Image 1 (cartoon, rainbow, N blue to C red):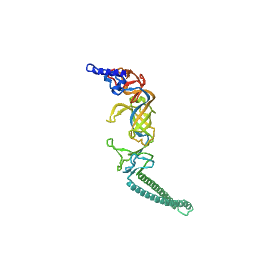
Image 2: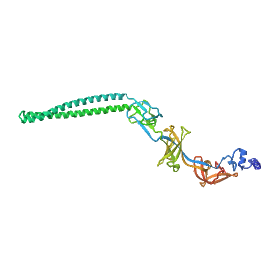
Image 3: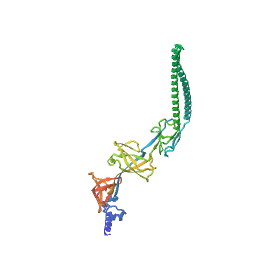
Image 4: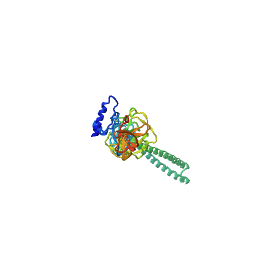
Length: 408
């Protein structure tokens, strides 16, 4: 109490002299508690408002935070194979199972086409039956002519018939053989027409079945975009897509990835297998586990999210695999990824605001001790966005300034 009374007296004297000379106030922690209700220690009047922090020991996590977007590792693309109008679409975002209906197309013209193909098939089959019947009759005639011709030479030798009759039989048999071959070709052609008609019916049936698109596997429905880059829109009921156009995607949400970027200054800290904590803007309270699975070999310019143009910063593409399976993990959601570079169980650390660099490029802090401010060089091991881990130069419990003092 005697020291406190002396200090109060000294402060009063100094304040009384402020019009004649510059006032310098030297205060201890106890005096400042009395005067301003805080734990500020100062070396002069200009430094009176600089806050302090005590050096602490405890667990520290070193992490790099990046923003990215969720996507499915694997997905099925649903494309159209016809030019039919869309009559119905399963709502986007629906979780479907294999065999569920995804799209229904207009199919009236394919019903008509199928009927025409079936009629053509009936005609082709009738033509084939007629051709086969004619061929059978022709073969019977040819066989009879053959037997007659083969019996005549023996009769001619015995003088019962003339040689001219034998020749006439041979010519008739030869003519019938030729006609049989021609009719066999007609049967083959008729059979080919039937096969072609069968394929035509099958094609129309396939197109008709394509009027209803079923899910080839389970997944989350995501509509495809159509139009140019400046006028893109999602597919809608009533539109008529062109053949081969992508209509929707079925991503496998059981295996999700985060696509992001890493700055070149942090590249040396990142490796495949590095653990990651993932948070979604849509579900800020949820934390998902992940790990780094891919780091690009080539750098690129970072694209500004505001201007959409390339900036001067160089970054590398980074892919993170989400290890958790959760229905909240959906393609396109914005994700914040904390890459856990290192973890300390019992580290000496200080706030980043307490770390400075002097004119000799030394890392320093301003230590407050016994009413004085001391500039002290230190060695930093690592830092995150809040604190720095101290290797040497400080001890637990010491106090440091959180801003550069005006004078020491």
